[in-house]
Image (cartoon, rainbow, N blue to C red; front, side, top):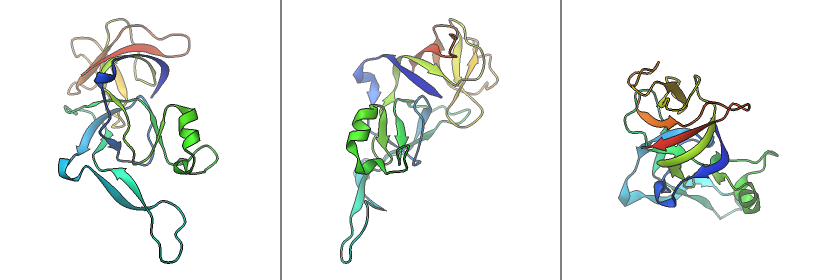
Length: 184
């Protein structure tokens, strides 16, 4: 799954409380909450920040509330992940050491940090199963990776128990992207 920079949404429809439960993840994936304990929302992990010198120990700070890619039949879909989650850049250097890279990339968060999750809005998306048309439904696919399958608005789909997460507003363009209205 992938989304283009074209997006139309209100910042009030974006949740910024959860981190992804894996070290990497792609934007455009639909996620479901896996853990959230308000009394233990944030803290330090057992992952070291970098090189440890004798007598010192520096650990990473992380968000403990986590989301995971939505599985088929999931009824607790929270929304669509808007940023990629990475541990290392394209050269293998950990991005936690270069905040400039994260700022320049503009759509990347370091693993363990909160990732923005869209609950309502319009995006241009690619990587779904099926051929959408205006009015087609978007459902969580059977693959278990948070991707979408196209179905008819009356829930006729290859994943009949899946939650409807949106409606396609267009067919696919020459590049395979289609406009999706996310509505959870």
